[in-house]
Image (cartoon, rainbow, N blue to C red; front, side, top):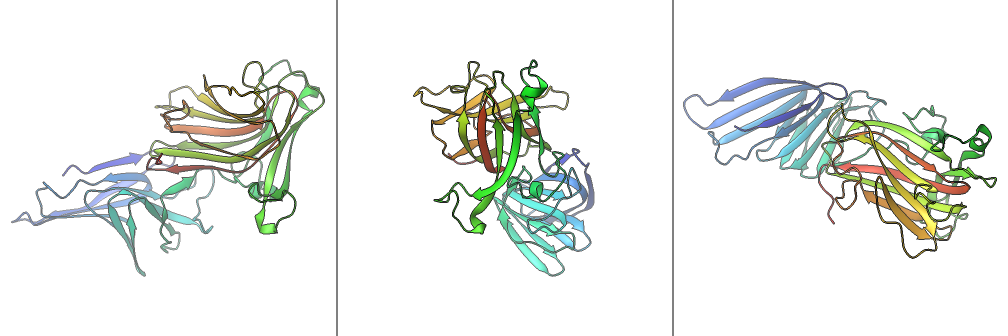
Length: 364
């Protein structure tokens, strides 16, 4: 009947069984198909009912003894049975996650012993480990963990897994140990960039800032900042929307330096295009202060955002799938993300970081 199912072996493997297939014996009245999914991620593309051999088409996915998903014909759906990869998966409420069901097109109904919930195109629903159905949400996923730095400040291991790892980025291999030690990262709490005052605001309007600092009239370029392992297959996502608040308090190198890569705020993505055998590639977002009215055009591995020569906050916002940039338009896998200051002397700050993935392309 042209039903198309894709299974993702990465990262935890998948387990799917055709549990039930039944058709009307003496007529073309009805066809019933039931799959039992026990692990991993699966995408179900169900054909329209028009032109099929049977007048009624039933498609069901069972994920536990009392949870069934009835998928309408002519839709595209994904079901992920949560398993630990890097960190333990949780619902948006922080409880252990059993499964997550999303709808690209069409509609479905999730049933459990307590009731049911209908999910439409562009929506998802989470099921916790106890089998409770959550509320309807937009089908979006934030791929960056601890973008507000709360877990880092709470003492989670700074290993780049649960939160951020902190270290240097030595592009100039002649930099000495003392020149490296001039760089540091400091975390402190301040008012959110959108508040009128930087110092006077209610506690609920405060955020943690990561400040990258290098001083001492340095003469060689050296980067210092944070990095996080993502290790994610992103082939299902048509949009990868990166957002971060950033400001450059000072920078000693004009613009982005002579070679256009000494950026006081740098965001680096390491990724692969098609296959695990592909080499890792890198793309960079570069924010710098300037008085020059001719911003640096995008080129090579870099996309630039020039801001006024003042210590003001700016909202960096890029869809990494946007065809106008050579960023991650065709990437199927992201290895990690790093955010750091780079140059000679600099003081820069970042906060409120997210990378929101969705299965549907963003509207212009």
